[in-house]
Length: 352
Image (tube, rainbow, N blue to C red; front, side, top):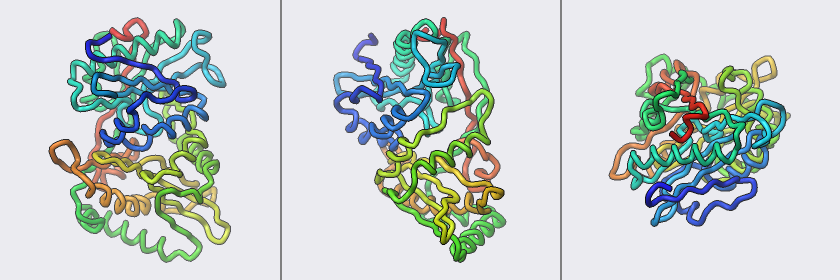
């Protein structure tokens, strides 16, 4: 045990989160993906079950690490009975798979992450071949890299300081050609009589099964060989849609009501995030320009949420994270590219 800290492993399918988890999430400004109902939705429906490590000290919950474990056959992996990989990531989010309270210093974080590796690989059995961390920025990578591990380049991330007073001010910060195109596309979509656009929270009007199928098809087209991920389940989207800290924009064809595209925004005090997006391809009946339009509509909500508090303890500007991929397009929208990495820890080095 690391002096002053305790670590517990939780299976969201069966275990209740420890006392103080909801207070920790609220105090740290974590988004909905860290909430108990969303993690349980992941656990109930994913082929790759999540595993949550919670670190506590005398003041209560001090940090958490999330991962999933992957097998090499169809169906759910079976700890102790087949080869596995511990994939430390938070499904549905492109940030690091951990969060620690500010009171936890860097050296303690490093030691706690090693301890989580030891506990989790021991729980998964001798067939666990190692640990994979993803996605990691340069700063996060320095916390977990060590001699004998190896690093792979991952798809770039994107972030943008939300220092704008309005959507129009954000648009004016872009190049003239991009600004003109965005305004034209929004006007065109607003004028389309055969298209229904809705934006809001608690979107219980959406068919979460349809969302899950669309998202699986969309991400399947973009998957990388070393980054094969199980599709996010219906239960995950059902949990997201029922929340007031998750906004969704949807595009439906009229009069059929067919869902053409949708996107999500996860509210958080310091780092609101653009979450899952999915759209039908044009050959499937999808529409052009919806991807760009959804940025404009969700940006307004992101800026409203950014006005609710400082971006960090002691002040600062909140930062909108834009996920991974589509780097050139996101750069034209005002995002800054963030190099990202995947770190592989062979089993003999796990916890060392």
